[in-house]
Amino acid sequence: MAAVKYKRVVVKLSGEALCGAGQYGIKPEVVERIALDLRDVKKLGIDLGLVVGGGNIFRGLKASARGMDRATGDYLGMLATIMNALALQDALEKLEVVTRVLTAIEVKELAEPYIRRRALRHLEKGRVVIFAGGTGNPYFTTDTGAALRAMEIGAEILLKATQVDGVYTADPSRDPSATRYRTLTFTEALQRNLKVLDSTAMSLCRDNALPIVVFDARQPGNLKRVLCGEDVGTIIREAS
Image (cartoon, rainbow, N blue to C red; front, side, top):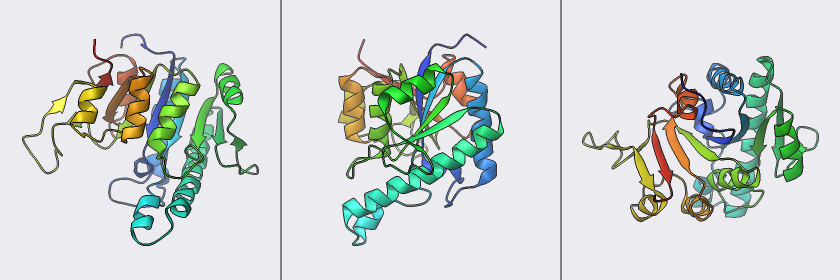
């Protein structure tokens, strides 16, 4: 396998990645498999930051559509991300990967508050940092939180781990003729409304020239392949 292309990365995991397709909650065996992949990547000497969503437990936007106050729903979703971050930390620590959870919402008995310089020190000491609590503000998704944290810590790329093997011209589960894009520009992704990340996160990455790779997290070893520059998933970047 080729040498790694990046020194510092942020991986965005959906909450659903921790429970398996079409399910809710946290499935320990699924979390363990993800942790094994992350351990293998960490052994490559990469500075690794993680952002995990909370959709396997609670979705603020869906709750808002059913009558709940939007801000309240979003705060509940942020708490769900903290639960997922702690589960992921537990799985990594069992594999002897030193991990810290930093959260934008203070829960001092469980995790450290997010402070940028503290996150940088943890990374410099070789620890995996899990960023929880989104941005700490309602009306922003964990996609935006991942883009923001990636830029704050100087990550070279944002890796979006999904349930499909890249970005397609249409939903491949509904349209068998859909084809995978190997590369896209930020402008193309926004104009075609491909919904790789939410538009705020995508614009943030575009404005700061932070490339994104979308790949299938269910395939063991895919994360390492992406980091070694193999043709996995779809890369979104500035036009050359």
